[in-house]
Length: 151
Image (cartoon, rainbow, N blue to C red; front, top):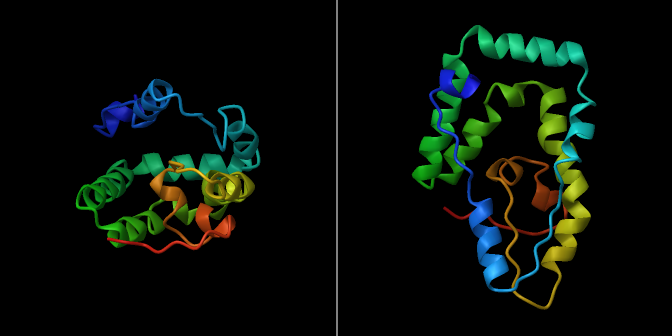
């Protein structure tokens, strides 16, 4: 219902394609997080914070819609800096407890796994959602991986 109200279509994303390619080529697949992991982090968000955030977001659905569209527009233009700026100013990131659970704690929990994946003798594809690499305290920083933004 929320998706319909935000006029967004649901698509499976790139993950199923990557998995299919890896299986076809006999490549190993590993995950930094499982579906069972996220609820534990989400449970750390106090219920009053969730209620306040949801109430704020649904009070004017044009605000999250505009934020999502600005992220999308920056993404398709390949404007990484505009994307990151939009993420940083998005309504969800304005709530420290939400940001901590959705991004920061996850980035920290992925650090060791990312370091191991990047420290192998073979070419390795590591796919991480863009939100996890564009803000200070991102997954790469947490893993101690020196990376430069391009684009």
